[in-house]
Image 1 (cartoon, helix red, strand yellow):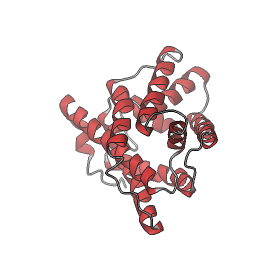
Image 2 (cartoon, helix red, strand yellow; image 1 turned 120 degrees about the horizontal axis):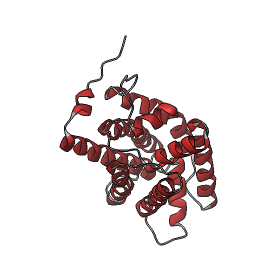
Image 3 (cartoon, helix red, strand yellow; image 1 turned 45 degrees about the vertical axis):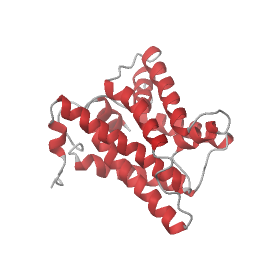
Image 4 (tube, helix red, strand yellow; image 1 turned 135 degrees about the vertical axis):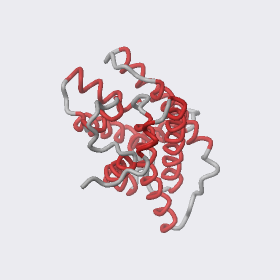
Length: 221
């Protein structure tokens, strides 16, 4: 028996509605990352790297996120011949901007209970954010595009590519002084169920129609 998908109607919107859903999803994604970062218990592998870079260059974490996303888009489009949609470019820019804008707004709790509550809220909201921007169907994010491109060009498993890339990025971030912590492990264990829950809310699990680029990346992983 299929579980209900209360937000599936949002995936059937006209273009204006699609862009609204995309923007809401990306804004929520940026908020989620900032919640985890300010919690102070560790962050996702890519943000370990992004924060690490800020220790060496006069950039904010959002600016590093945008720069790394742009480099990935250039590489995947020029070298791997991977197509990208408008959602890809908006993904690159808006998530980093939101992270920076919320830097002084999101709390930085000092008590462990408050820290972990905020961190876990961030992990949960990432699932909802992913369901929203994937449901908009306007293009995969730069990191998903990289995985798809390597999969199509090299034939490697997307799961193996994801694991390999994130381990390399994590190691580089640690060497640069990024905030590795127990939260990084909790994120690794919790992101799968969170994204699965978010996709389910939008009816994006077990769909029969041809998948979008974003959905294909998630399906192959």
